[in-house]
Length: 90
Image 1: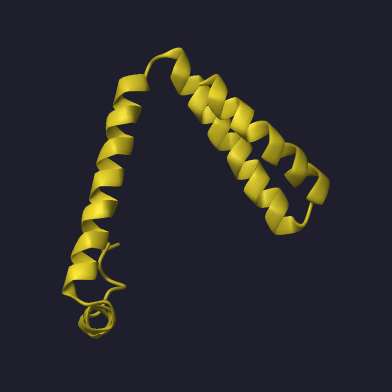
Image 2: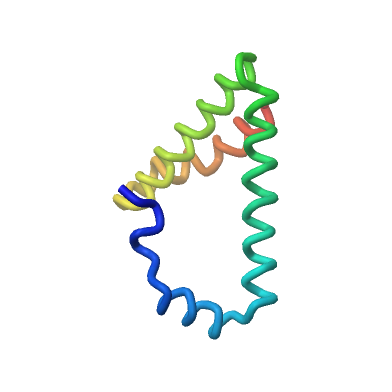
């Protein structure tokens, strides 16, 4: 499956004309910087105890998003209070 198969030239031209070159270039740079930072951080914590903690926080965040999506207000409320504490534990 080709990664770029869903992107057409017309859609790219519409995006560029709507956003402008400068805004599009800034957005692409920001995304690349964030991806690089996340990959660098993951490389630093891989194989350590922090990896398990980060995975746990990601699972809690996923459960929180899913509980919000399905309308489980009590679970969402509890997890919204728990996740910042879990992030501080890292």
